[in-house]
Image (cartoon, rainbow, N blue to C red):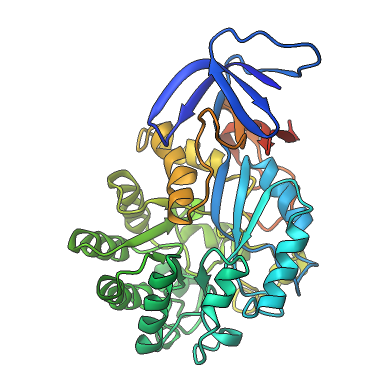
Length: 420
């Protein structure tokens, strides 16, 4: 296959150029101008389009096993491909929990049948109870790329510190859901004017900030690579920046919904704008954008969280938290970060490709000769309307929105896995 005349952006080398790409056996063999197609070689014309490394999303829920009425490995892979995502890292809060080697191996074995690369994080604690450590070494040996009890905070600091030390010894990240339930009366909605209007208490930002403050110190002391998942508070961003300046190997994820929306969206979209941690104030949203600008936040991840229409139709205090995000993440980044000139396209792609690849030791996220042919081809200027999904679920407040940045083709292992 040859990709002709695309505008190539490679965040790994911080280079961009107009050139052709020859792909053979799933590998990028040649990058040069005016490559001539050989007999039988497929040609993809990318005139006017951007060619970037396939996106890597470090925070995904495919609900498989246990909740496959919401999503499964196959529909999740289809959604990822449609969004230009070629590698995902799935969370461990399935049923059964990914806290044992047999469960992990079953997922990874089935994942091999899909067109994108599906990686799996394992649980830190058995049953996500925060009490008994999983066999982290055995799980890593079986293929776990990191550890997380995502969805549930680890409240015992000494337990978490020990887990961080083990993660450091294994040279894998440990990712943390930072919400202390002691502060929360109704999760999924920020405590403030909007929650008062709804007649509920909600989830105050101190629930997140208190754990970020604690865990930044544990990260600094342990030396582990620690990820603050789906950061939502401006003060949390400041804390991460402080610990980074002190030498902690601390990272932060920003979701597209946290840099695109505020808690006002709950009044318009109801449970479709309910998530943990919740959407917060405009000041928090702008602080997240500043964190993305100055490198305090080095990852953009969706927290893709499918739920059924029936579940999301329940009252605000009873509906589950979470939205889907794989199919809109690139477009939301272009629409809310690149077009307003908060970030350049190179910087946006860096946080969605090479940064996650380096953190998780994945040999992807770059366009270079000899590298894997995992690519997304898109038009950053094309406007499109969000109206349907490859995902099994459709719980998104962005339905009906007009966004910029249309994925035209996704290539994984040298194979076209999505075509517009």
